[in-house]
Image (cartoon, rainbow, N blue to C red; front, side, top):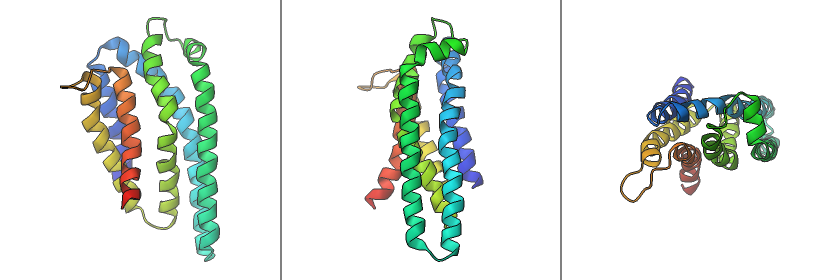
Length: 194
């Protein structure tokens, strides 16, 4: 659990470090996104806690089929709620971030980051809520490994997509959001392939 939590914190630190190399405007723009990204992630965290407690209780009652059903319904609910929040967020980027105090010169950078983030956040919902279901079974190592792998992938992709290299164009803050999206999906995709 500790390694998984450290990986999540490192994920944000790595993003912040590389984005800071783009300059103060880029760092300020992405900093404005933190309250929104945290609020949307709280939906998943809350549902994850519910999944975890419900699945653990059902497994304790030896009701594996009901536990699997609860996991599936919880994942579906989390995805639906986050897609709704993301759609609302996409439609309100300018007024929302102006309300938070972002200046007009930062709005294009915020758009670059949040337009990708809102579209790809469902890729994070499934691993986060799924990890809660896995932990409820007593397996804390698998979710930690998934989070560490995601953090490692993000750390490799951030400089590549933010600054570009060879045929990969420099995408700036949009590259940070794309790197995050790929790192959210990659460990689960790889796990499903095996």
